[in-house]
Image 1 (cartoon, one colour):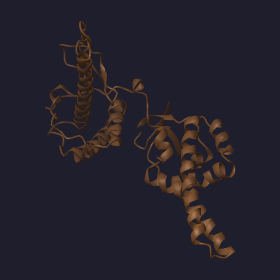
Image 2: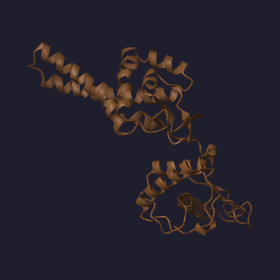
Image 3: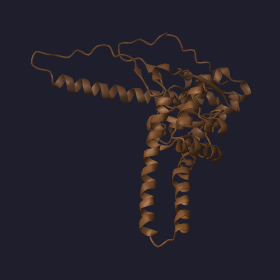
Image 4: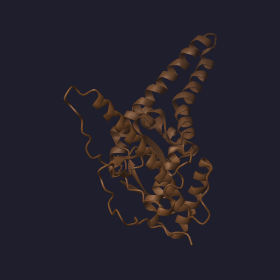
Length: 305
């Protein structure tokens, strides 16, 4: 785990990508770039048969700069650090402070990649990644970037605090389909670390995230409800829906299994184990009692006056 501190004094727990996963992502990117470059070279060979040697050399250099060098830079800039190989391996390039990269970061990484990867067949990049404690190559060092894992095992994810009791079920009819995964991740990271933040910084982050969620869902926070409580209630509603979908799928499989049982055989459904949602929360199933049932959960939120 690598702790990165953002400009808002927020500590982010990011997992730096290891050399094997980075090498696999790079191999995928090189295959894609090589295929595109081969197609471009083939097209130039057919279209530029009448060019003299000087013109052909200029076209070849321009094609090399645009495809193997400019292509990855453009892709990382537009995708905010996720090339095709990194997307397939669950990796992403971020700044040292955990924020998304921009054109200048991708430009430095791409320029250094020509020397580290293309000209030295990746030897320099491998040595630099092995020496670095966070697996960074020279391009990452000069650009101030880091390749991290986006897919974190659910068992290690921090639990999101429950919403205030007076907000449970308040957003049952809310349309959450327009909220992107990146925004869900940002809200979840804030909720799991909000008690570690300075009060002013935490309030500002909650209000900013609340505005973004309200813009996506079309439902602003109710009057008098803090932005953090609103975010917790919306995330809880998503967890409930995810758990409900998982439960319905398991129940449908159980029904199909009962229908396929032979004569004299019957399936007896036992207590359902807890269901883990995509946000990392575990909801008890049938036959499991909620821990602390009979008393209101400790949420850390104060009811509005």
